Length: 238
Ligand SMILES: [Fe+2]
Image (cartoon, rainbow, N blue to C red; front, side, top):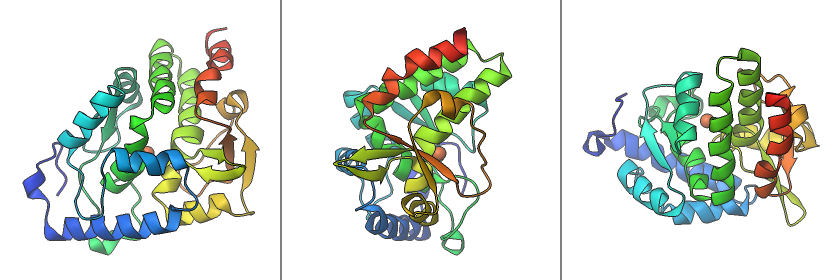
């Protein structure tokens, strides 16, 4: 059932089953393809296949580590609200799960995407520094649609569909990849274009939300994200 607040006792046996199947299946598939930072973060945030994460428990762990919180929303938040939350270290997440019938594909993000794929890295300092600064920049340009679009592209090609190099290997860290077997396989294959992370190129690159991506950008480290604000700010404020 879609509620705007997590009432843990409302989760059904089917919800637990859906979480368990998706968790085990996706983790087995991504384990050798995902950034080590994400796997470490899964432990830090104490996720498991056996229990649907409790938002209060997630928040007590995150607030100690990075000061972040997840808050519930029924569906995707509008841009200004979304960026206001980011600027204040809040990430908006759904708290409902797809049904067993929808297990292989769901068009809109549910809790498996928002919580399994997005929240572990909210325990990572470098990652969240970038994420918060993105929200702060967006609020400064919120009445300029072209600049808001630039920041949405930046969000898209990092937080949702970013890749990162680790010990010479390319790994996934974007939540849109992490929560999708098809996107993971495509991002790791020779079929997709992989370019070096370049904030200027990204902010000028259109993206599509209705299909798997054709291009992904590879970071050298999460520190590289915050370091790129010199060029991001140049594009936004000059
Ligand atoms: Fe997402």
